[in-house]
Image (cartoon, rainbow, N blue to C red; front, side, top):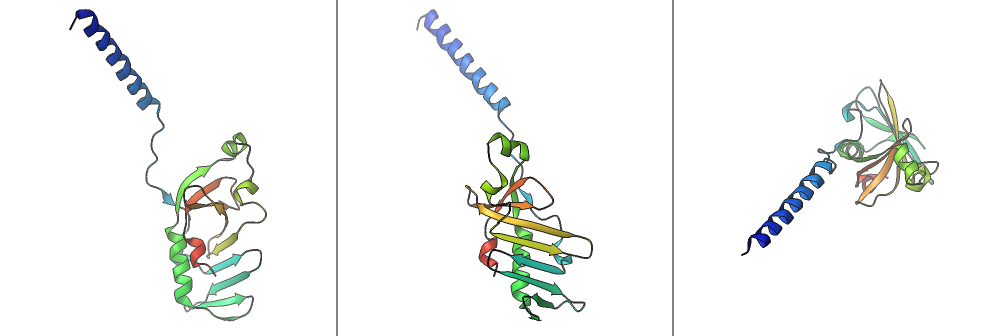
Length: 167
């Protein structure tokens, strides 16, 4: 090979390596493992309320640890079914957070995610210390669901599977 060809190949290789290095340093860091969606320990929950367009139910745990339905009628509740729902809620992962600024930048509203006035499901978890209400909205693009806590303005993407265990 001639010296000119060798130098040209060397310069192109250096430029290519420089571009790869720049792309890697400017790339957003991949997020760590997803965090839990709910900020409450599931074992401390004593009230559970579900509400959607056509259905509303509320369950409470009594002092003996047994679950009962208090709304729409009073009855004993299936403790295994409620435990399965609570375990599923506890296993939900927060995959992505869409802030109000990001939402406005995309020209979207809370209603576009289905977490404004008419969510698919509204779930309230209560304990002696706190009440948390989360709205489950439309299906997310990555096989999950959009969700939002009523006390926050951020829209969350969470793992799916919750609606399958709900009444």
